[in-house]
Length: 102
Figure (tube, rainbow, N blue to C red):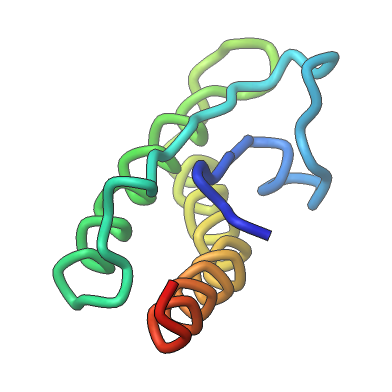
């Protein structure tokens, strides 16, 4: 599967569920198609984008109210931990395609 965009939602941090359009939770799209994920620079830029997107998503609760600093930080840590697997899969996929000449 090719990931062109990673999607992050506050729901993932609080329930582990995938956000759907029916949910009124914030969603942030992170563009990855323009990054060279096989390089350290590309991976660093991805981490920067993920941090920014996760902060944006975790700033507000499901009702649009600001979270407390403690809740926001907990959401940030949990969401970033859960996305590490997605990032590892994405980088691995890019490296495999590069090795195969694709």
